[in-house]
Amino acid sequence: MMIGVGLTLPAQNLNVFNARRASFKCQKSPLNPTSRRHVSSTSSTELTRETLSNLEKLLQKSNQPDPERVVKTSTSNGLIETKGKGLLEGLNLSRIWPEMKAAEEMSPRHLNRLQRLLSKTMEYSPRNNLGSRWREYHGCNDWSGLLDPLDENLRREVVRYGEFVQAAYHGFHSNPAMSTDEAPLPRHVALPDRSYKVTKSLYTTSSVGLPKWVDDVAPDLGWMTQRSSWIGYVAVCDDKREIHRMGRRDIVIALRGTATCMEWAENFRAQLDQIPESDDPTQRVERGFLSLHKTRGAHVPSLAESVVEEVQRLIEMYKGEPLSITITGHSLGAALSLLVSDEISSCTPHVPPVAVFSFGGPRVGNKGFVERLNKKNVKVLRIVNNQDLITKVPGVFIGEKAQQQQKEDNPWTYSHVGTELRVDTKMSPYLKPNVDIACCHDLEAYLHLVDGYLSSKCPFRSNAKRSLAKLLHDQGSNVKQLYTHKALSLNLERDRFSFPMPSCLPSPSQ
Image (cartoon, rainbow, N blue to C red):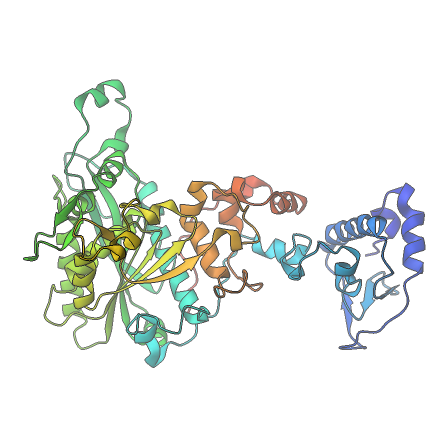
């Protein structure tokens, strides 16, 4: 296949480009003088055409000395060869265009990388054998030494648990309605990891109802006004190779965020109530979260009852094996995860290690509640986005700083629980710096930021693995136009990003 310059550049600019190209001196690569790269794929035509077009624009703007040189020849079979560095690297474009940042491979002009990131094909960071260190990654030392810089194994585990929550969202929205006349049927959940199997569905019920006039004014709201809703599931690892990799059999409890009007109504019931099982009146949690956790439905048990019953059953079933319980949730699900962890941490005499991985979670209780979880040895890793307002409520006006300034602890002041992993939307080279509130709280945006997070002092890592396809689909208006335009130039039309959850992703042990 012969890719001629005349086919790539406009006719009026052809002489200019040829004159510039002829002035380049020959230079071998200082790293490997004999290295050769071939453009052999038919799909590379558009890539080369776009690259040369960008190159022409840059050369026309340049008023600086000629850059480093490369040699470009045509072989007998019509292939273009470049000796030494690649075309863009060899030209050292940072000298021609001073505004270019150091991380050139993060640039939208790095078309091969961008095309891979925009692919819907899942690609993961390495999933190494955790073996004897599994307790450390599960939080036995509060993740000390693993967060800054972020350990690659912990990064993958955090993203993995976030994907369990995405499966809970998908499971709900695929069939949100519940019958008011009979118990719900078993629900299929497409898990992100086929080494796990779902063992139980979980439901929440609101203790409040909408006024009757709401049904009269808007009778077609349907599931948005139902009191009971599917909130998540319990799953257990059932693959021997994955159990060996993780060093134990893992029980996962995944909870989605707010979806119905009743759940929103409960979110705003921000009074602090005493925990029913506690004799200490200073141990308090938010009334709305407690209501969703403890209220029974007409045909479903409460979330607290379901979780305790299923965890006790699984602990008995796998007695004698090393077990762990991991609770993960986003937004409302993150808040309920803390209440669930409190519930199951004392449900049997010998409870396995309990850890919570929460994404974008609000405050749940006061300092007494924090101390209660600490005494029960519940480990909590909160993933927080700097720009996410949800993580600052309830108690936005009286938070931890105000409490620290008081001589005595205030039982009516909210406090966060656990260890914090803080990410920042502004660190992503793909998202706009002024993204909207919804994007700052979006779960896919959280996983994108965690996958790219390196440390508090370093930018977004250049070898991030997570695909941008779902992020572009969910938050396209918040992605920089350079990338949305480049996606179109790569013929990645937006309708291709109808990102359905695959029925099952490859097992990490295969």
